[in-house]
Length: 271
Image 1 (tube, helix red, strand yellow):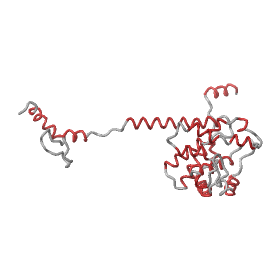
Image 2 (image 1 turned 90 degrees about the horizontal axis):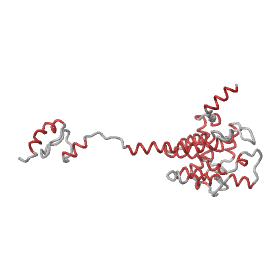
Image 3 (image 1 turned 120 degrees about the horizontal axis):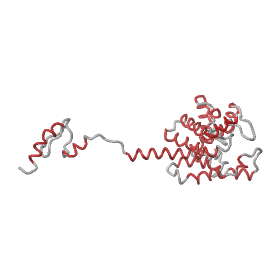
Image 4 (image 1 turned 135 degrees about the vertical axis):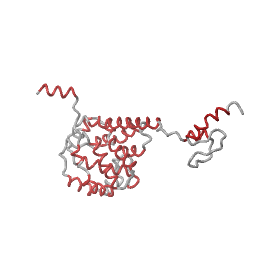
């Protein structure tokens, strides 16, 4: 008998109690487990714990996406007429995607793309964005640089979400090829961008702007129908019409500007 054998014999009841044969016993665990060395069989009975790396990654991803959404909302906070526009476009785009049978991941990309589609307007002068009258051709081209500006801003941050970048770049492409910035046509335009183009136009028409009042819902819908096949993908227009009854009208979901505590205190003192 070797020096370690007495210790092994003393521990034999312990091996038996947990259903694992001791060293060299040749016995199998209860339940007919596969013939692995007893050390590995014992280890395999330990409960698995969630990987802290995956949990940390999920938290970091959530914080990162919240920061991106805050960037889009910060741009809109300067203008009461567009406050909440991107959030509504993202929600309406996700509803259209659901009607089209898109996957959860595709709808998530559409929602985020809608929330970020106008980020590039941060590089457009405010006097053009808020101009009360019609834009000149040169002013229009200047404003329509915002898809490219937005893509340049976001590309280093969300290169792992290419569908979102496609929305930001291509949401002003026209179905007949007369849009910007690339003159894409038909199915050459990413479907997610075609969805957001419809959602963006609908929310813009049904929300007030410096140069006009908001349009009635029926008028906005008819405008989309009249331009289906030229500016908009007809399938996306029909999907919007089917999705609208189950969605509260986006213009009525406008986010209220946050009132900071010191501003609330000041307002009460003035009253």
